[in-house]
Image (spheres, rainbow, N blue to C red):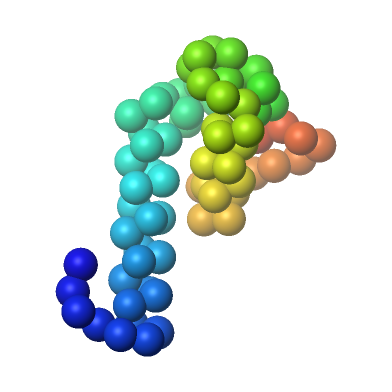
Length: 78
């Protein structure tokens, strides 16, 4: 990362973390796992052998980015 300060540094960090969240989801196969329909974070965590709370944080980040939707505790592709 560069040597920006203030708001520029924050924007730089945000774009990095968005890219990492997307990359992680792609590598894990999140979007493929949701191709057949919405699932809960717990259900996906079982599939990926991951911690449900950690995965839910990732899924919520993807919702915030507009890449997933969340309805009634279930996540789906947008």
